Amino acid sequence: MFGGGLLSSGNSPHLRKSGSRPVVFDIGELGNIGEEGLLHSLEVNEMKGGSSPLSSAVAIMPSPSALWRFKVLLFFIWGFSCSKIGWDSVMRMSVDLRDLFLYEAFLYYNPLLLVTMMVWLWGVNLWVFSQANVNYAKIFELDQNHITYQEIWKSATWMTIIVPTSMTAYLYLYSHGEVSLAASQPVLLYAAVAMLLIFPFDIFYLSTRYFFLRTLWRIVFPLQAISFADFFLADILTSMSKVLSDLERSVCRMVHRQVATIAWFEADSVCGSHSVAIPVVLVLPYIFRLFQCLRQYKDSGEKTTLFNALKYSTAIPVIFLSALKYHVFPDRWTNIYRPLWLLSSVLNSLYSFYWDITRDWDLSGFTRIFKFSKPHLFSHLLYGRTWVYLWVIGSNLVLRCTWTYKLSAHLRHNYLTVFAITALEMIRRFQWVFFRVEKEWNKMSSKNNVQLSPMSDLSNEDDKLLGSINHNV
Image 1 (spheres, rainbow, N blue to C red):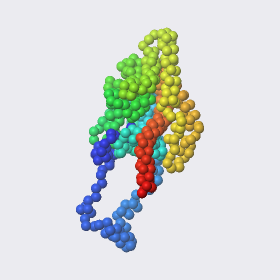
Image 2: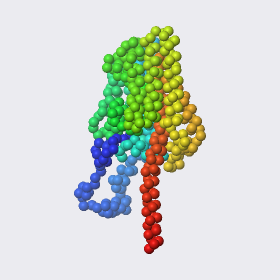
Image 3: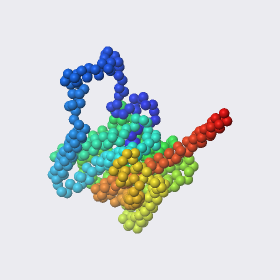
Image 4: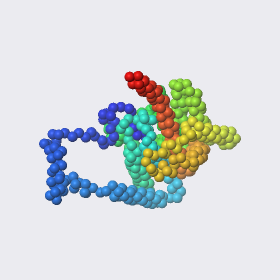
């Protein structure tokens, strides 16, 4: 996700970008023809009216703008085809089963769609950092071969194509009676994603995948000092807790062979909507972040980390009190547990909002992140604008209050509403990334200035000393 790997030598073959190979020119391969002789032969060919192979190759290549338009045209044709096939497939089903089937299909593909959205947004984050000359590679401790925002967008483009295509195939095959083939579509997609993440060979950004998996390992087992990348990714996982919960339910149904079956009717089944695993998976990112804060307190002794741990602990009662609705009598839920759930939801939302504004962000000048090195419309609209303050603070407050909806199992009846709220939470986290990285950037910049100031003072004293010696001479 971060677009990089461990700090290592630039000559390591495991840290090269996918598809990159060292280019070495051997004089023996070029024969006895030197550079001047090659240029002379090209000039002679041009004078004779002939064309060199190099100029012919350039001539037959399409222009970048024409190639880009062709790709956009193909993308729209693909999108229209998927939409048309999917709609026709859904309309072939009976009305009473249509909504239930869409709910199940959405369960399998909604997590990967949201992950794809997060990858797109992360690419935008890195694009802004690069335009503002933010050294995010140093902030996240990435190596010099970290992938760029263009490569992240390329990966997101393929994800945008593959996931809806698999979903369209699932709808089409099921509506035409090919149930076994339909059931294999999400299984194959999930298996391909898992294999791609753990594939040990130097293709598809091995160093980035290794860095991502290594950071996940450090989050689950915080046995070492917590780096900025560790708690940064852990914070993002808290916003994707609903995605992780749906992934667990999807994998559970695949393992128990419940894909494209009537298992969605059984809410109390092992993979149903009343499963105990749902609140457990929802709470895991907050538990991980809580342990990280405790580890930071052990290493630094700062009491602020304990208050941060308290913030993440306030999400635990929100999740488990909501899950109790399916395991207690209705009157006990109405009279006891629902008021407690409401109180814990308000406490968690307001505490998290307060922490964002006062701790995670630096409100003294957080629009510095939008000051691009070159003139740009995006920078003109955002840099130094008062409305940016108002929008970020207001939207963060509203979305902090609405995200308890996705954490509460008893409110997740309308899957489209939950999808929209989860997507909005990712947009909130997308905004949060700018200001959290900027605060770390300002912190590192001030630290560097402090470290450089004694050296500058020493150089000034040396200059004075040399000046006095010259004067005496």
